[in-house]
Image (cartoon, rainbow, N blue to C red; front, top):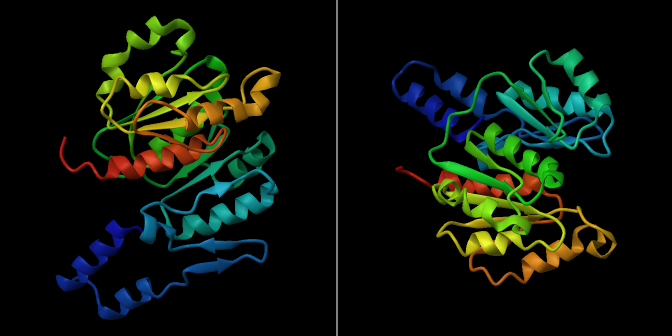
Length: 252
């Protein structure tokens, strides 16, 4: 149950359309479902505005399927990140509406579309090799009801590519910048906008990139004001934070 659904329930009760017993029954559902191998948080949407997200890596396909099924008993959608083809085969047999976003390594199952948020989240990637992480961010943001603008392969090695799209990302409420190698792109973008910039270092690069540590340290030491940095390859975390920021926008 989301905050909006809870508010609607109380409105229906106030209007005399439903009984007190039905309200109590809806609000008294167990907040946690014990599956033995997982404790499913059924009140996550009520507290945070979005259902629990399933991290697929390390879980068996059957475990992911059972967790998703429990979430969908009380929510209209579920997002599953870091999945494999084996995960999707099991999910598709159980949930006909399951959609596999291969590049993003995500599966989305929706009984109905989320309420659209106002404003846009721009997602920039430095190179094409960074696109899987950028797509994880994009699918996460879209599943949470945000309008997303993708601007890919606009890294600092060809600065003219970025400047040619500056007017596009300046219109966004939040900007996610995904980059590997030396991780310079977020600093450049932050110097061009008056919006929050969330930097995502990726593990793309040669030996001395240390699987993304070089980009991470570069972003943490950014001279661009207002740059926030998430963990290496964490497109999901960047998009979740961006969605929360975008939710604060009331008028646009």
